[in-house]
Each structure stands twice: as C-alpha cells, then as structure tokens.
Image 1: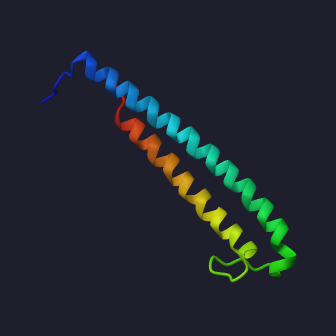
Image 2 (image 1 turned 180 degrees about the horizontal axis):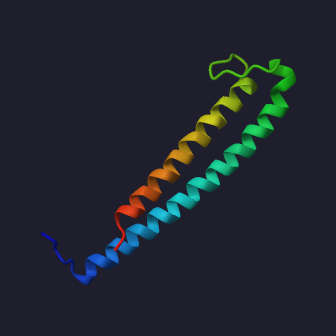
Length: 91
C-alpha cells in the first residue's frame, strides 16, 4: 500500500536531505583536515618516535598520528552514513 505524503512532509524530507548532505560535506572537510594532520604529525614525529607511532605511547607526539588516523576514519564513516541517510529521504 502506497501512502501519498502531504506537501509539508516533502518540505521536511528536502530539509533533512539538505542537512545530511551538508553534514557529509563537513565530515569530508574534517577528513581532509585530519589527513593533513596525519601527514604533518608523521613528519614532525618521525625522528623523535623512531618511525613507530602508537595510540598509547608515553610520548604525546608519538600519539598524534594515531589519533588523527582515527579521526579521519570516523569522519569518513560519518560522511558515508550521512549520504546513506540523505538517500533514504529522497522524494
């Protein structure tokens, strides 16, 4: 059984779709910034950390690449999830 939605609901769907697409763009920008942070922290910490980077390292500089990698991964997953949610609210 197909239910026709009133026009107000279509406006809400368009608004939700726009918000999800905006969130996806913001998540992608965060992922790009995280990748820049990864590159920067890898190069700055290479000599100090002897090329090994761990999330639970006692040296804070050796933790930064791992934290940035997790942030990049989470933001990419968030962008993909936002796009799937936006697809769900198509007209």
